[in-house]
Image (cartoon, rainbow, N blue to C red; front, side, top):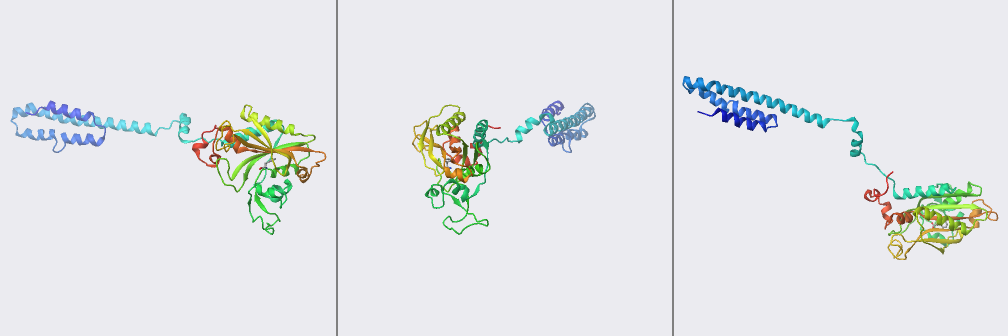
Length: 357
Ligand code: PHE
């Protein structure tokens, strides 16, 4: 005689671990399907004698019902489980907007150069300077002539200018009769600023400039300068040095070692190069300071009388100073960046190291 209890136990043990509808249906048919274990037992009833059938028949039928009921219940509970799982997955909890945003929205940040530029603009604004802007595409007048650099002046070669025409082709002029170039320095805004103003005045003008240069750790073809100009009466070199030192102190939040060397720029007289001790190598020598330990950061000087005249200002009455801060070098010194080319790389691994909004 087959042991119906054993069959029942075996069925239950198998049923309870099933989690899929199809698995339950398969198991059910293994027992009560056409050729299922229990179905076969029921089929065999006819071969039994009357007593046996009486004793065994109802139990086998009970087992069949039991298996069918258990299967139906298991199917129902699997359905509930599936519905709950779906609900949990599809759930949109409107109170969780913050978490959802963190997952999907990446926050941008300011480029280190922008951070420094904003900081410097604030420092100058607090000292009464205006902040001016100017065009990137310039003419010879603003980039050279008004700055005391006539066309035959050798200083034109100091800056490897990008011309829109061959610079030696004297006939090459555009519709309004000017030869065009990409400004090679922000000093172009000296003239633009003077022409619209009456002294005394002071302004700065940050912006990108372009030079056809070979690039290395400290040179780029497109880089950023911050021009400054202060015009009034009886302004001295001492005023110039005071402003420059104050600004550097504000930016680096500490006294930085500076040195002043004579420097030649046709638009200032006297002209200086203000260098700071390299903060990357602390003066020991590295690729940024070209092993000198000092970095040229701030060319400056007293505005040349010819430049004042070009700006409509009487040099007999007024004077002043101008400077052209190398903004990228300053960024490098401030953040310890050892190659200027990182600044233009567009590499988010570099950019994202700096302060967010
Ligand atoms: N325009 C000069 C340059 O780019 C820098 C400079 C500006 C020098 C103002 C003196 C005064 O090299």
